[in-house]
Image (cartoon, rainbow, N blue to C red; front, side, top):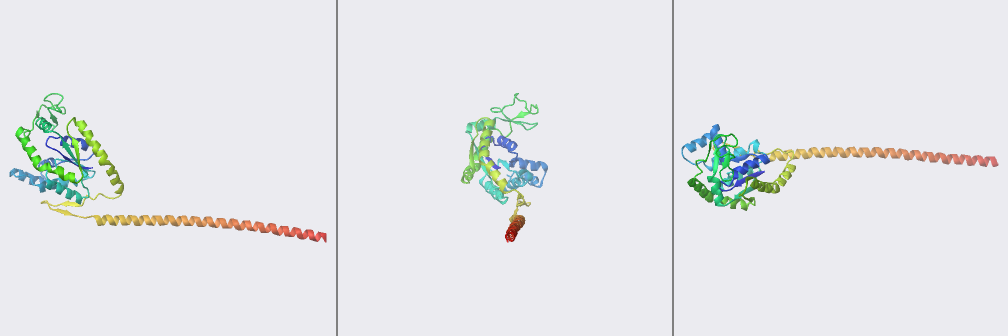
Length: 318
């Protein structure tokens, strides 16, 4: 399954993406988390991102799409993925479609979470995070069992994120309306957009998502598995080069060659089976002929005996 989750900040994309990843055994991919992880691990990409952030500039679309593409090409993502928080703009969506097309793994579904502005504000301004284990809560919708204490690790370090204030939330919503909202029209034109009612209990929303996924994607996956049995995943189609340059390496010729060899092997096996069947038929025919000859000889002997007995009777009369 290859799915993108769309929705305003605070719509519950991250929470539902985590549940989907657990149920369908595919990775949850967040562009922001990928960049933070790269910086922490001090990879080549992480060094570039850290340098850009230190200079006060915004991370370019090219760097973000490189990070996402690298993860999509990993072994972990071969069974599928859930993209959370990416793409955010039309250019990013176009780049994503292009690179997934090179890998012969196009998006299957885009889920849009629809909910009222009032609920969005409560979800955003009510968010709490544990500084020790990272567990998330919401003081309005999903508070901890004991006020101010984490259910998972028992820490009392539950606090609101620094960027979850009135001004920051308003800025994020404005940015969403300007850049991300047009993606609804973009994916709707591809007939991939499905709307999910984003209000209600977390489990209720998750059941709505599963109903859509199980109805529209799982049957398609069964057909794909049946038609691609015995063929390797063409995950080597895209190769990343430092600086964001992408080289396409088409392995279609190799695939065609392998299919041709398989067909030739099948034809040889089939011809051998036909020869064996013909040989068996010939043996059966010879046995029948022998039986007929024996029968004729017995008949001839009877006739000869009848003639001899008739001659003896004539001799006696004389």
